[in-house]
Image (cartoon, rainbow, N blue to C red; front, side, top):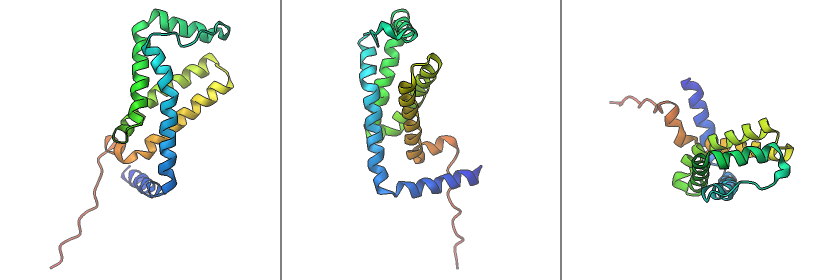
Length: 159
């Protein structure tokens, strides 16, 4: 396991030296935040997520979530907005990505299980992939959670 983690650490260190990926990462963070801020805000102010009755099962599910689980609906919105805002602050971006992952994973499961349509499923899957990318980008911050970081053995003192 130590060898695998050491290899991942080396790949991560090389990847972080690629300059254009720093810009790409910021674009991904901004796009993911844009994806959650409006929908999260709508939930926080307790407005229905959709008013399109023609959506069938999707409309029924969101209406039930809004009307029957009001507090949960608002908490989901708060979590979405918090994750989005954390992504935009460099110091908290890794925490934002950690928080974003289960939220977008739940959304992907929902879109696939209710069959939202190929466009929505594609977008939510790409958002999930982007969240995983951000976790990989911040590997150096998440790595200590997985296992202790082993420092190389100091060389013997020569006399």
